[in-house]
Length: 137
Image (cartoon, rainbow, N blue to C red):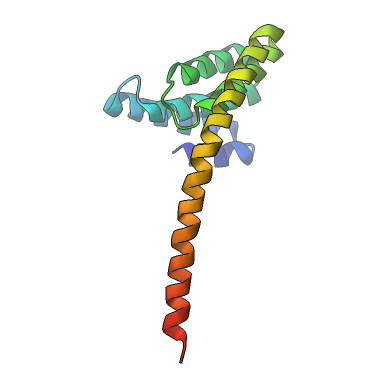
């Protein structure tokens, strides 16, 4: 539902984006609980919707909720988005704090993802070589 909401958002249909995101939040909260990691993305997306609707206090509230879930896969991105919220509110020190946290996490994550990417690349090469060898006369 997050992707559907973002599609509505990208097409300028803020009402549908908000409704879809609200539904996503309700379902995840009901079935997975208040602190499930999937909620972090929904809160982050709702913050984006609210910001586009010029509802900055609500956007800020949702962004705070997204960074409260620290195990979320996109936590660094949520921190970076929070920096933007703080900057817009004139809280430059807080903005710098969140940016530094995001950068630190991205640096740690980049090494992990580099190795995961290399593993996937090696598997793809093995499959490609196997398929190529099977086609040889």
